[in-house]
Image 1 (spheres, helix red, strand yellow):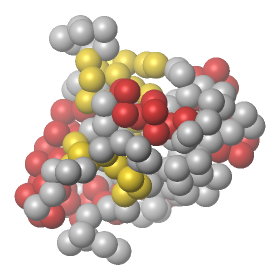
Image 2: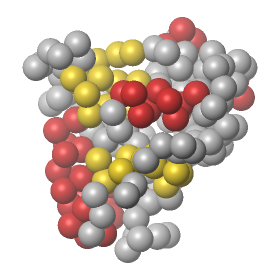
Image 3: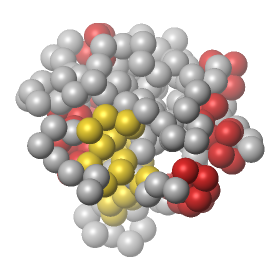
Length: 187
């Protein structure tokens, strides 16, 4: 779609960064890495890439940045959380109604879904709650061993969809609910 320019990004109002409008898709991953690690390949090109570790994402970012000449990265937890609320203090990212914004254990049919099918938040970001958990740049509690995950995944129960929920795992760990979205600092 927009290979040379890079993925669709949303400038966060009043801040000096932008976030991916959607989670990185299987097609976007395949275009850069030449392969697709996802379990849910039958979901299609527009489904979020999953089964990617924090370490895998670092390699993807190097290749994406070399190809586009831009400086994409993972968001910090603070950036993700501020953007996730979308300008309003809702229980989930974009609404107090989980069904309108999140794919989770009760409605996902045990699979991921194409990005952008649920309602976006106030900043026009999609799937910030549910679909896949998103890796953050930050370490968990300054631990050298764990990296943060935000947003909840397709197999999680409702409490994990909350905008405030924090998870973590080890950087080499891959799971069919782990994906990511891009961030980029603006001049």
